[in-house]
Image (cartoon, rainbow, N blue to C red; front, side):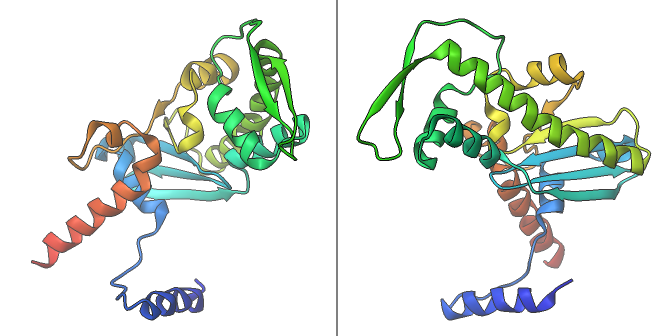
Length: 225
């Protein structure tokens, strides 16, 4: 482990008059938030997809038996959309968030706007045409991720695990049904089961790492008392 990197982080917070009490590895906080003891025992994989990377965490017999960071996340889709339609990253992200769906393919005559990179002109395209492009990109994106997941599970000799997805990109409409349809994967959205908070936060996979960290802090605080 590169402890110098940790010391550098501590110095930054000390410069802000903040005292660092400890570090909580995301690998463990995400798993802590999502997985129950029986999941860790019987075999589970957590696939946490963030903007710039994807983390794969495999559990068996109450142990973290494999983990890997993949250099692909939701930003991959944004970059592809930006290049395909010549949009700036913000416009591409907005288009992805508003119209990116993996529900059953549909044909629509609805027109949606595409702002140019200069934001001086606007083109209109049919939503059905965008959906065709989008589904092709999402299939390519998930094929890259799923290929890595299958390799990790094979090397760890974990067969038929419970599969949990977390992170912002998995919130797109129809994601779980699409995964089953396209890849034969029956997964679940990983949500925190450890803390009492608002339903809106508990239902969002985006908050899983933070909720797992809060659970850890609460656990260690009680352990010290």
